[in-house]
Image 1 (tube, each protein chain N blue to C red):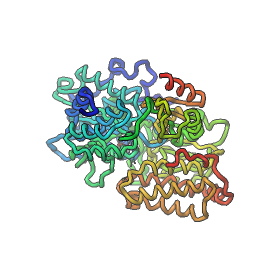
Image 2: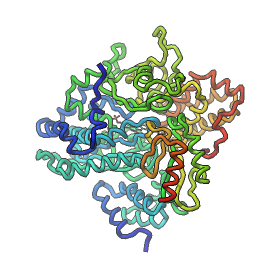
Image 3: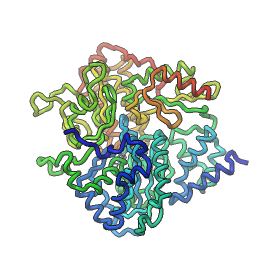
Length: 453
Length: 160
Ligand SMILES: Cc1cc2nc3c(=O)[nH]c(=O)nc-3n(C[C@H](O)[C@H](O)[C@H](O)COP(=O)(O)O)c2cc1C
Ligand code: SF4
Ligand code: FES
């Protein structure tokens, strides 16, 4: 039986973004019940026990993060909604905001009730103009209906939602970069600790959650823990630190697929099934060569490489849960944005494009990231001009290995995400890179100087 | 006499109660000014700083971090047209599209047409990869942009 979408259930309905329609579908009944009948701690417990992990990239258990707030804090406590969604090739938050903003806003209401926050800042990347207008319109309607402001549902619960627009910088998605940007400063990520739960926006305890995470909160409070846990993948018994990969997930498909669409499936679909079935296969009758399984920061999968310990299977067969991509050397599930690269595409061009992004978006605060992303771009640019040197590949891997919070040389994870695609691409497609260096062949794009910065 | 009208100043002031600190109004104020004047001249920076009890250098510092904003001496055309160069778009013809638009408009990315109608720019992934190659017209996505569709769009923007 095909899976029936829940997070995307209302998408495609006429006026799916309107308050009346949302309420007619049972919307805000869950928030009303929670606010009137539950204690905030009970909401925290329900979200925690559902096993929900953050959808913004890091996969941190959501309810657990909420418990990190100081107990009995006099307030204010803030919620920051992370709608910066700038991880390349990711677009599921956009669909949720444009088409069903009230599902997100009900999650915000529930989350704020749970964490005892009276104010949420909804930080939306500037490029999402339509999403901004849909969310702002929904917020305005809620105020008009008395569902935001003071004494919501006559229960004494107060909440304001402020919609705030970004200004075209990827680093504003990093949670402390977002906070700095919200405060009106340059978006330089902060050194942690203190984590935002202790000292966040305006130096107050703050929870940062992604749009999809908050949409899941709505559905968990509406449908219960058992529903959420009936979907996805339980913890790996061999790994005591695994928190499992429960619930539905929005996968976005892009690149060389026949159908670049956003699909909702229980967590854990294989990459192969996602691309071949839900994405309608690779375009133009070609074959896939590489896949980026979760946003550029996650690195590359070699579709033809044998999967260790699984006879006859390849990296194409990994499950897209929180553990799957890591098994083939990728950084993680990331945003579950899947980009397919066909067998006629040069990995040199793909990697140059990737390095161009990170060099452009490094905030420049940490020398290893600022310089490292620049060096990796320079080297890949050399490669695509047919001027690569034989030592370049090892230098790329070395730089990629040394920048990031994992090697401990930078403040935030952008640098890890810059290194990972470089390391995985060069290691997995080394023969192709070596051949390009040897032949000195120029990329078809090498002449383009227009974007040389 | 500054560059901001009283109406603009009032709209900036209206943001202040929403935030615990006035400095948080920096981005909303910059957007408002930038959108309407197509640039943020130095004088406007001073006026924003006054409204928010900041030093002009604080507003300037924030503004220049975001390459998005054009400052003194730079100005956007009537419409900003961004062509995405992200991976999903590159895989579906973004580099060719950028070149096409540059030829059609006779400008490089970052420049404005002589008639002041269109400023062409490249963008990193704009989150419209389901419509790659994609463009952004001011802040609205245009999806599946073929060269023909780009030509049509450009004609519309020229005539607007
Ligand atoms: C460079 C960088 C960019 C990020 N961009 C985003 C983003 O656009 N959206 C997002 O939700 N999380 C992003 N994150 C993750 C956030 O820091 C944070 O973990 C997340 O918003 C927490 O929400 P969640 O627990 O609900 O996933 C980014 C992290 C890094 C290091
Ligand atoms: S790692 Fe890079 S992006 Fe992150 S704070 Fe340091 S310089 Fe900025
Ligand atoms: S790569 Fe162009 S919209 Fe995502």
